[in-house]
Amino acid sequence: MFQDRLLLWKFKTGSQDAFCRIYEKYVNDLLTLAANLLADGSSAEDVVQDVFISFVKSADKFYLTGSLKGYLATCVANRARDYIRDNKRRQTVRRGETERIAPEPQSPVQLVIRSEELEKLGCAMTRLPYEQREVVVLHLHSALRFRQIARLQNVSVKTVQSRYRYGLDKLRSILNGEVEK
Image (cartoon, rainbow, N blue to C red; front, top):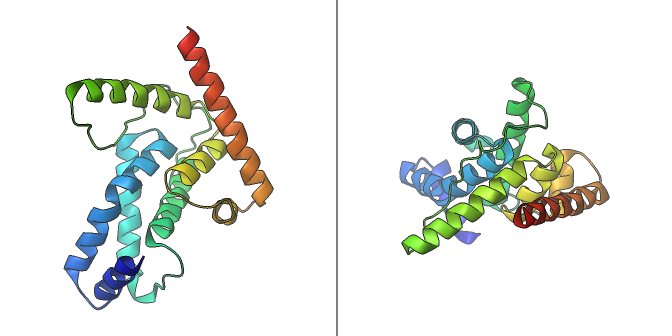
């Protein structure tokens, strides 16, 4: 948190290196978040780039009140929602389109196992309604609290908790169904 505030201060005073460090620190997490929300890797890249461009443009007016990662994750979720609305996409997303962006494991065996697990999880995530998927991803991946997600989605905390619970239940059901097949 302190490091983020220092980087942000340096960035606001004109340090390009500080922006590069912020970008490098968060880009992979934000790409994974966007890919999970949009189920499309190239759209995820567009959304994350748009967020960083907006971040640069508004840097002089920006004041950090919480975590920088949380702020950027919220921006990505908002931009992903706008992207979906603009492209008139609905809750159904074609299976198999999710491109997972994650660090590679150490051994080839671990890579194969992780790749299969991520593919199954990615397919299962695309079958969730968007609101549930957004809550699950924001809470688990970006570590946002339910209260923050509620403000983001403009709903009550109880609604967010319900979406989270229903999303996890549906994921369990989908993944258990695939294991049994």
